[in-house]
Length: 436
Ligand SMILES: *Cc1c(COP(=O)(O)O)cnc(C)c1O
Image (cartoon, rainbow, N blue to C red):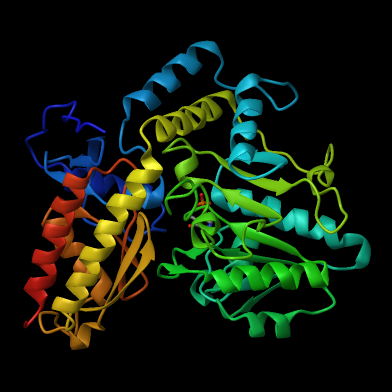
């Protein structure tokens, strides 16, 4: 976990407006981007085109699991690209089989399908649910209010947030949303057509809300009772971000009666490839007497790039580094420290920070509404955006979530020193908004 130097000399002249004008002319305006044009990175630092350095506590929205340009990832890319970059899924190749084995070793016996993204991994889960319920006329997937499952047509139907659906109606049929962490509401929402329940272990885009242990155990019992699939979206909260491979493993740690807990299916992406686009979904061998692992047989599902040798080689190397450098321990220790610091800030500056939430390296602090924060003018953007912008100016990248939450999703190899550096800057900016 040694700190890396910038591999490139800084570019002295300001190129931000040049880069931005290309976007304005030629790139669809689907994202509202910050006034930051990035050039290169090393570890948890990233440099913009003017040569300014930032501490990256967002890591590409929980993607760059080993930080930027990790030498092992570069090595894996180079080595594998000299052998084989792509082959069709009409053929076998070793990296895909080995990566599937690696994932299963961290979960339980089952099967894996490889995709290119998180939304596409979830698509596989929806198709699994449809196939599972098909002969009984069941097709419905219940998801949580405030969930996020991706931007494909079924993804926005599955996502429990109105803003992603607006303008794209009619929605793909068969999705309904139920309040999160509310077992009674879920039981009441079930219909004879329900085939599956899909939840995030820790809601990410919804503002960093972990499922409770009781909720997970209750959903498992409910699904067993009603012969429904329990599916989990681990795209953001997975891959050791919680301090365990999957967030449910951390949430249920040391909880009596939780030893045998497993979802029936689980999607992954983001940190799995550390920046190389790869997604996957895992299903357990058997559920409710059905061989889930065999349910999607030849000809039922496919994707050209899924599980290509290059992506799999990178993902395998990331698993190696996480194990060798004991990064799950780092997440627990350093993340625990960061969380306690955020709690201290919430206690010290209650006029700015309303609450803190999360676990490991998936942390958030909820700000007061902008009208109530002494240093924030009422007419400006929501408090989360104002804070993220101020942190940019102070040299730290964080991710807003809704109008009031700022997310910290650092690389798994963020050092304790970097964590301290980040928290000191956050404290200074919080203090600047405060009257305390
Ligand atoms: C990011 C995200 C997705 C979508 O992943 P893409 O790779 O952007 O398609 C799905 N679910 C969750 C929980 C996510 O955070």
